[in-house]
Amino acid sequence: MRIAIYGAGGVGGYYGGVLARAGHDVSLLARGAHLEAIRSSGLSVRSPGGDFVVRPAAATDDPAEIGAVDAVIVAVKSMHLAAVCGGIGPLLGPDTLVVPMLNGVDAHEALLAAAGRSRMGKGLTRIISEVAAPGQIRHVGVEPYVALAEWDGSRTSRVDSLVAALRDGGVDAEVPPDIDAAIWLKFLFVCSVGGVCGACRMPLGPVRTLPESRALLRRAMEEIAAVAAAHGVSLQEDAVPFAMNTVDSFPAEGTSSLQRDIAAGVPSELDAWTGAAVRLGATVGVATPVHSFIHAVLLPSEMQARG
Image (cartoon, rainbow, N blue to C red; front, side, top):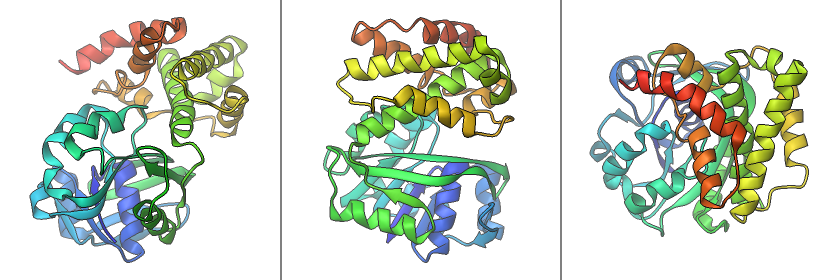
């Protein structure tokens, strides 16, 4: 299968690596020193499941050098989606499947005009990984999981082909019964954990242990569950307890990418996470006081990071 990874960072680099190791024709879109390292020495992946190095079919910053592919996995941060929309054209054939693997709930909508409805899928991933150094991906934890489907949630041959390719690479991949519910459930988790831990400036362990911050985290999750319901998304009845149990299963020192970016003083995905929770609540008349407060608290440092 010919697959392009648009954004070969921690997430995209990992999936590009395991897909290439499984024998698929993988092209990586990357930038700067990371790209140069991949070109010169290959892509190195360090993982609890085993370390390896692969040389992808192509590594470039120009989609035109790749051409049309069977599937495009979009794994950039949300602030780079506009650049993807401007550059994705050469990767698209008539039957190309485009699957975003971002942390928000509306990346597929942001890509729709550029990719076209007939090509647009929906997807999500669960993994903790990062660029440890140029050309090097470090898979920190969480068993890699991917859920994907067509725009309408259906299962087709091209969806099955990408699922099978990911499974070839050792990834737990599937077509879920309800892709929208799956995306919102992940959003409920990452947006709440990232926002609360970011506002507390503490890793997950202390936040989930103290009764006051644990209660704040639960209320943040309850707000997103209410917003999802108002948007017609049917989350499982125990979505919040399920997410809280997941919180308790993570390493105590765990942090989110949002929190790490804010602490480092670099642009984060605040707008696509907490900001989106507030906006999506407002459009359906659902109050989000916890997320509104977190957004207000973190926005000054975000604006400073953006210059």
